[in-house]
Length: 231
Image 1 (cartoon, rainbow, N blue to C red):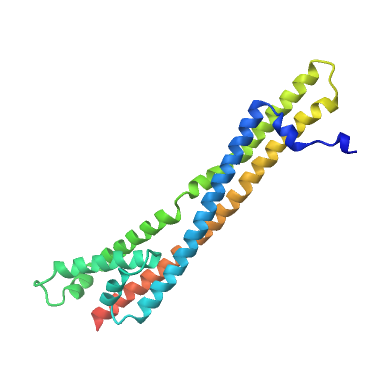
Image 2: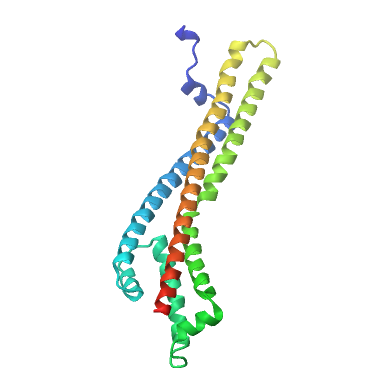
């Protein structure tokens, strides 16, 4: 029984150069995708923790100026990026009307709306999304390309195995190792692609959740500005 079984390690060691190159590419892509996955998981966990720290400070601060002063001591977070971008535009508006109008902010927003603040908040959203989306396209590429690389190795290995059989004097036992190494290429391709695709979708869902939270925070920020003007 054991004498007829295939030693996969020996089969791969004796595989053709093309199949070896395919397997090397798939192994490298798998290692690279897992490096991206672990890095992104850590980044999302850090963002969530930093968001909570900022939001706690934001809720306990007496005014927006105090929030801005305390921002310097906090690490990057989506909420911080949103707030600092919006607050910077608020200061620019205030300085533009300095000495010209008694209630510059109220005058500006009554006549021009909140568009400039909304664009400032959008800048913070874009800054965050650049970090959220970093390397995700690479993960998607690995997930979509790896199965085809594995399939190419499979097809090449099967062609190589049966070309020897077609020469005469061969048997199914002779081509079995070649077919085995070919099918291993497909298995390795799938093993590289499945985690990449799964985590790509997982990180996209996390990004959408963060964007939804940022939209809610941005609306709350605008509400605070409007209430401060009314008061």
